[in-house]
Length: 443
Image (cartoon, rainbow, N blue to C red; front, side, top):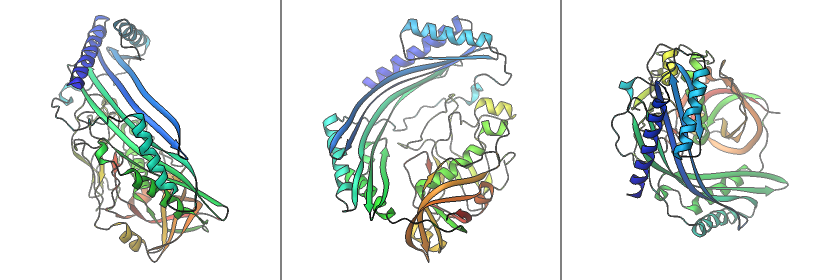
């Protein structure tokens, strides 16, 4: 009940702010407000390193004088500060040049139904209990194997917040959400060789987090597996992206079909709507209304309603990702993607991780990527990588200090399989992805 009262209070602030914008002469306005609080605890080598209590608030307002736009923000929610923030946005708008594509979204595209997406699960966690959980997590990692020689620590984080958004078209809505996580990172040493790895669990509901001991053990297990890593000679071979790094591959595709990249003509997938970019079995679809999921939202950052939709079906691009501004620039309609995607799902195949290794037979399993070597204009792709060399479907030894390279257009066309080992810890839900061939630069 307290949460609902707080949402109502914050909605009233936004309503007053929008009225103030109109009073100061703005023809249109929108405003967002967030109030957050949380606890972060970090333990290293059995000792408490940090205890942080977070508490923050902030608002942002955008006003339009016709198609002249101005924005301002503040962390002070007092009536006087709000008046000054609106005044600052208005003065910026008056001096800015008109942009014929600027403005609020089309009114008929705004969300009108506000069902509960089950995003709010407060965790009444005090610092003492958080320290205990983090210590247990780190202990399970440090005790896993004699070769675990050091630790970068274990963390427990809990966060809760309220978001309110409104605009002068009559849209006004607020909701509460939570996010909790446990993570651990340790170092292993053998024969002078040192490696580190980590693991984490994240969820909106604490009951859906992995046990702290499991997180610690997984971090240690991954670290031990990396000891004795070698480089590879330069070659071409199949590459299997493990589920936790495969999401980055899909992220590069999403960036290429996003409005900003398209209207600036800085994408390797210009004019790709209704064209075949992936093999026929690839299906990418968005499920923004999944209950309790990390990427769920009823509307985007402009208040435009989100909806379940195909992004890629039968390998063919079915939708770009557009906010209102990009849509107008491209002569299209907003797709409800101001602020990004919501629960992008890659349809899994029928093979688990072990079966994907068998299908690959001989090649490289990638478990970590370094650097940002992706050219969004050409699709050229080159990133530092580490992982494991696989022969006859069996992992042989860890590898590091290599670079994998290709062109994303070519890589997408030559996806051979998507595993059913889906990683649910983010906004992109995918299993491992097997690519037919890539270049590997090593020794």
